[in-house]
Image (cartoon, rainbow, N blue to C red; front, side):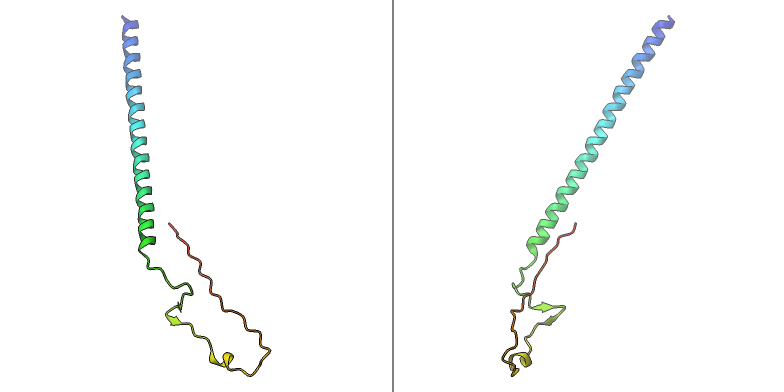
Length: 97
């Protein structure tokens, strides 16, 4: 009789252990699914945000609300040997999430 009670208790404990393991697996799958959904939503939002930005002129004509102008004193200067270089403005776009 003692052996039968002990065997029944072991069966109950193994069933409870299996139920606990299954519950933990379901919780882990749920967390991973939620994390994947949030990641997809963030990436989709970033894509839509990037697509909604109006493309700017290639030379980005305004810096902090002020338009760039070429100084007329350099153009009209009497120095002939002045080294004239092309003005280049580089634009670096970063996307931070």
